Image (tube, protein in one colour):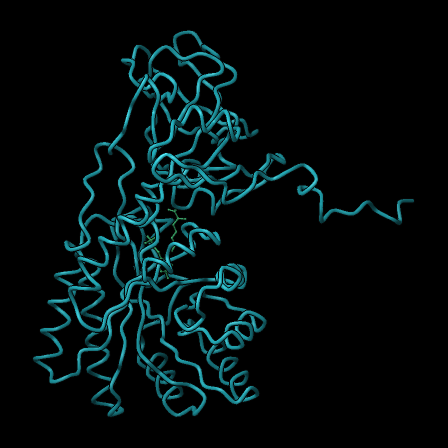
Length: 432
Ligand code: LLP
């Protein structure tokens, strides 16, 4: 991690983070525009420009805001959305619908109608009901939908169970059983309103080895061969999902995109060559790797509590409401005192959140300089699945988000207010 420190303060994309905390308040999400853009450019260099007929669709669930979507468009990436809300945000950010891919294991009729009305580029179908709904809506509107089937490739990945999705026992994807998958494919091919493009898989998140992507790709490739043989139908697209690991702690050894993508492309090209198949378009859907490291969160230190002989709890003015990942996945983070960034660690403390929940511990046993109430704590790598999983537990407010770029800062999400917290609530009229 490139940490820039000046005058004992942590700087993020040219901005003094202590100053940011003062100006915008805490908790505060801070995103470096340069770091996001750099990730997009890495993907351009190691994939988009390197191979013909490939696309990258940013999995916006990692961080879906209008400003982020503007950046994604500017950097020439496609967009993956998984709900009416994410789709609505993209459309409001003027993102072109035809570059949107719509995923999700339980899209509602309303969401599918919305997607078809906007004219999204691809719908990744996850069930038979969905296929039928899409066909019916298209028939009514006299349009066709470009679809892929999400398959369950039946591979086990080396990540937290809660974020692995490609195993046989999964709520995601269509089982490989021929009686199910091939019946669906046949139905898709025979339905005039459906333009069947190909297959999709996503096997899990925060992966540091390429083996499972390769195993899953082999499953998909074997299937396109069978589809060619059985239906004389040429699959035009394969989507290999996301899941590329990001760096959370100094000790995480992040792999470059090429480590995943070069072997995947070699496998794909060789298989197609050997089996006399046209190499389909290849799409990937990274979310986390594009935004995780660009984001930090700033909190102010409040109460400091020493449990003699046990540990020292240092509480921040946020916690699981702005970063649920430690509580939910035992995710580990690293941080620094932003206002004492140049000082040597002198004590070991545990950073606790302010939610009424014992699992609301952000970091256990972190080495920090002498910590005092009022200090600013910066947590690194909170850009992915931080803001996007923020919640109002205990009626804590969702923090503001600031984009920083070469010394300049701009609010891209305003801090929630108490009024907004209650805007959908109504007093009971029939109180007896
Ligand atoms: N495509 C699909 C269909 C997905 O389900 C996901 C993530 C992605 C792409 C992007 O995966 P990524 O590149 O970000 O690993 N909330 C969890 C992560 C859940 C990921 C769900 N799907 C966390 O905070 O770790």
